[in-house]
Amino acid sequence: MDGKFGSIEIDTNSTLTELSDTITTIPTIHAFQTKITRVPTLLHFAHDDVRPQPNKLGAIPIIESQISQVKSGIVRPVDSTGSADGDEKGDADHDELMEDAYTLSHYMELKAFKPKTLNQQLCEVCVSGFKDLPNETIEQCLNVMIGDVPYKWTCVEEVDLKIVFVRFINEELDGAAAEIHQFLKCDGVLANDMTLKLAVEKNTKQLVKDTMGRKKGKNVDIDAVSQEIIKVLERSKTRRPAMTVNEMDYTVDESELRDIPPEILPQLKKDIKEFRLKAIENEKRKREREILEEKKRAKLQLRKLFEKFKEDDGQGGKVDDGDSDEEEEDDGLTDEQYEDLQVKKANQDMLKKFAVKLHSVQSAERKNKDMLADLNELKQYEANLDKSIKEGYATGKFRPSGRNKQREYEADEMDREEAKRDITTKETTDSFLASINIPLKVSLNQDDSEEETPAPSDPNTLTIDEEELDSLLEKIKPKVNSYIEEFLGVEEEELADFVLSIIKDEKNKTKLAEELEEPLGDDAQALTDKIWADISELL
Image (cartoon, rainbow, N blue to C red; front, side, top):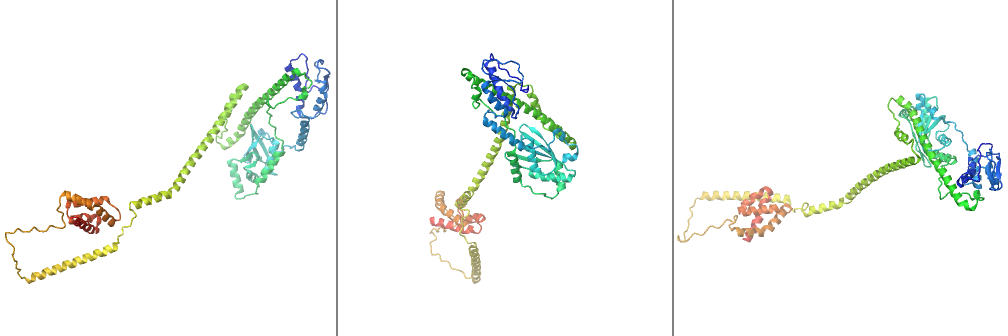
């Protein structure tokens, strides 16, 4: 094939594995997915036991029965499965890709994008949230968001993400501030599984605020912008992720092996599987290494990009390079050690995320418990209020006394007036009798030897012994309690005991009234009269 792909030899004395490796190289020539208009020279042999001439440059040894298949495969690209349908699909994809081809017009390399003046630094906006899309797709999305405005952009790759930096090109700083103000209205736009976030420096934010003032600018329909970006993503031919092939879903094309002797066919299939799976695995590891190296280079370029910002701000705006030490430790590791390290890192990240989720769940549970406790307390408020009111009624706190203070006061005034009249009448009578001065004759009809009759006892004093007095007090105790409740409106056991103790100690009605005057006031005499009346009845 003019020496472009080298030469491939088939030795009849080769081992089975070597033979399978040689055969599997034939479909890989088709994987270039490009149309070749000239068919290279084919070196073929009619029988399996015929040995070709060695060192034939540009010749591909192949069995004669497969010549037509190889010719058709070289003329048109084939699918990864090697089927004719895949070939047609590849042609259609290629044609569609050529029709939708887009040429970058605003993109700049990261080194060239570094700001050289303060105005360039003020006119920059950072856009985060882009997936690992082709630069052509990202630029079309930016065109939708920015519109027909001159700008430049670059990006920093972070494994499966891209951080985009946009710089507006406008000689007038006020005009650039207005364009940035309009662009910032697209902050938070959603497109499939992407959320695009826009951020600017505080100096840029202040510039936009000072320039625009209270101006609102043109309105931006976020939904319309989101739909346009989704259309761009659908039209775009993004990078196809590497196919993951395992032993269960990988099959060998039987048409490629139809001329192989049946006795070696099973082992050959197994060897072909092992070879191709190993090649895919090696390619995967190589890609991971490349991604790691690309991440290192991107961090270094990003650090250099921010050096200018740190010098202008005069403060230690530090770029986080905490991963650099870990990445340096990755150098020199074997593939197995590298995989173990990646698994450990993934487990650590998963544990950190789990700890954050667990903390948020626990906080939510505590909050819910507090809210439930408050809710239950509010539900029981009326019940507790009714219970306290019932207890208050039971203890007599809210029981009306049934007394009319005004009527009692009028009765007391009448009693005082009557007492005054009695005193005045007695004084008048005494003075009248004294003025008459008539001697009274006393008849002594009784015998001098007769014993004098004892003077009647004082009704206000008790002359009974202690046992009779205790019995008497036990009998009148319920009535004393009822009298106190009648006068005060509540039951007072202590006051009742106090009254009974005075009766027991003093045994005098006057002393009892004097002792009760302090706690009962005007009601003391009335209570004393009722109690003494009951005592007199029992005696």
